[in-house]
Amino acid sequence: MAGHAEVKLVSNAMANTTRRKIMNLLLEMDLSKEDIGKAVGQSMLDYHLQILQQAGLIKIENNVASLTDFGRNFLESKGEKSERIEIRDARPVEVVEVKQLLPCIADTTKFRIIARMDPPLGGALKALEPLFPRGRYSERIGALIIQKGTVLITLYGTGNVTMTMIRDEAHAREILEELKRTINDAIEKGVTPAPKEKVRVDPMEVYRYLPGTNCRECGEQSCYSFAIRLVSGEVGLEKCKPLQEDKYATRLEHLRSLLAYL
Image 1 (tube, one colour):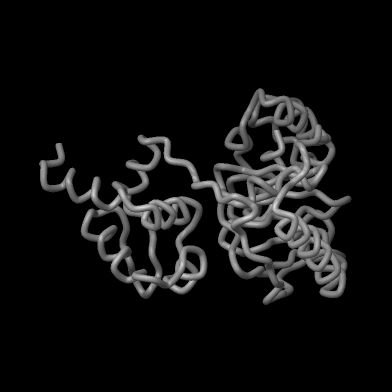
Image 2: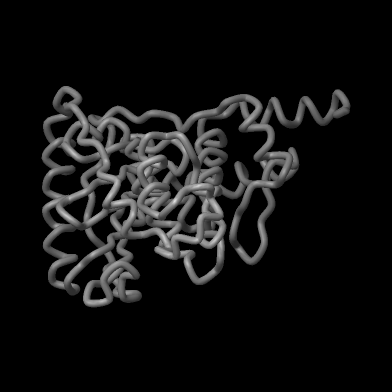
């Protein structure tokens, strides 16, 4: 059991708004000090990180910060959520990087792209959700997930953007510019529209990213049957044993994003 001194350190660390934001960012993913500074500001950043380290909530190795097991357990036990930012308080974004990575697993003629928008939008992403008919904010990964035709876009609060089923870099830039215009228009107006009814995920969309082995290890007769149960929320992705293999890592990542609609 933690002593009085340890409890006091943690209480002091989490009493500050900036430090709470840092903790919630690290709940999504490990981040460099530079990325944290972009998200929360550079003012007294080293001091805030030092306080969190002294409380045993985070660790920093090779200039990259991550939650300790204690820090992660603390957030989960307290039910901490990403702090919301009003859309009127957000700053306009710019596309600062587009990089082509690998061919898509589902269609090797298409590409998976990673890009970056700056400044990071953080908790303002939740307020932007209604702008996109096929968009949903995921608390679990701290990202706004948008489907545009066959393209799946994941915009993280940290500023990173991933896209799948992209034709080429020009196609990626076209979508990013449209995304930027939509976001910046909302920021300029300071308001977002009322929430729209979400479109359900089609089981066939899910099926395309399953291994397709029909191995029946999940207890279903086929991968398509398993896809139907996934969409209905009756089973989780962990039931598909082949999907946990390293060679299916990209498919698993895509399915996690896709199923965030549900």
